Amino acid sequence: MRNSRIASVLASGAAAALLSLSIPETAFSASEPTAAQHKPRWQWCDAGSPASFQCATLQVPLDYSDPGGRTLDIAISRIKAGSGKERRGVLLLNPGGPGGPGLGMPVDPALRLSRKVRRQYDLIGFDPRGVGHSSPVSCGLTVDDRDTERPYKARTFARDVERARTVAAKCQAAAGGTLRHLTTRNTARDMDAIRAALGEKKISYLGMSYGTYLGAVYTQLFPRRTDRFVLDSAADPAGYGRGMFTAMAERAEPAFTRWTRWTARRHTAYGLGRTPAEVRKTFWDLVDRADRTPIEDRGALLTGDGIRAQRAVFARVQQAAAWVAGLKETADGKKPRTSGQAPGTVPPVSTRDVPPDNDDASAWAVLCADTRASWPSDPQQYRHDAIRDRTRYPLSGDFDANIKPCAFWKPGSEPRTTVNNKVPALIVQSEWDPLTPLAGGRAMHRALHGSRMVTVAGGEGHIVNGSNPCADTSAMAYLATGRLPGKDLTCRVG
Image 1 (spheres, rainbow, N blue to C red):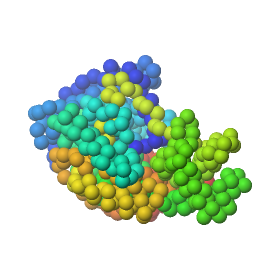
Image 2: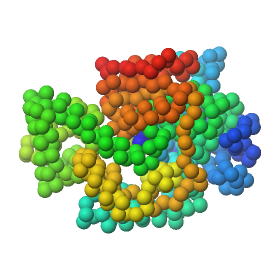
Image 3: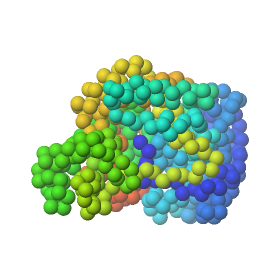
Image 4: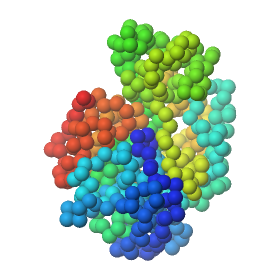
């Protein structure tokens, strides 16, 4: 659920500028006010970043039930409010994940905030515990270990089970004393530690993708410290865990059907079929051909499974049509006439002092610690579910139902959080989001009884911020004024 549009621009030397701040041990209670803290020792993050971009480090307990025990470093950053007179407080930012670094978000050009919001708030970025420059976790995972998104096949399932087991075992061996405390609940407590260190009574927040779940957990733990919360592309708080994968597979099917209809109406442009049935047949014939003879795509060879693995692209119909047409022309021995391509990988953030496997290790650590109870321990259950879901959801059901490292993970330090409160919040959601489907946003809306929801009808792709002026206007107005819309709103594309 990581935000593929927001990439940190923190330069590689930033970690050297992070200065340590110790917060008194008595500061961390989810039910009692947090005592005032010493202010962070801010310093210019890096010579390659704006002089106004400042960084510091907080120390927080690894285990909040043992405040005198081990500590973790939490890297934070800041761009101060543009107007001292208009300043309201702090706006914490999270790009998603779990495992997504957010230290560079205040200076990320992909983050779209109104001038009024920038005048009113100090923009606060942070790497969540275990992520990036915040005591990064590492499991010593190899490239093969990290490739856990695989389709179900009878002949490879035993290897898939062993790979998932190996990832869990390596993480336990390398970081077993830390893993159980790398949870969303503890990250929410870290957010409150940031609030206390900054001397604020409340925080405002913009969270994206998984960051919406993190924000919702904060509202549950600290409702009186919650100010203005915008949740962009929300996850279902009850379905967070294994249910997220099922939801993505389920939503991929209507997105694919929509794409076949759109593409059939443009046969002259793409040559993939004059009817939705013809377009569908062209695609699946291409998958079969690629299984026999892989097709070159941007310097890599794609099998049929490799094509199916790009299922998120079908949420963007024009991009998908151009990409599939290009693959077909390549398979036919022609020079592609289209310039489309499937989604690329997220640009890497600074790797200084960050282990190469931190992205995967931290993502599994948080997801599995949070939701271990939702993952069966018996590998045969995954075999059964993958076979079933390949029939239900042909595009990607077997990918999403196949075994994952969480099957062998040890539980986190606490049960998952039930989100059910009346704290005000604004949820913004695209209709055709492939990673946090619309149904999940609606479920978040129901769980947060004080919320309003803005739906972008016809909106494509993951993350609304910066993609729809109507939705952006609603979100920025709420952050600036604190007034939620009087009712749920629908925005249109175009």
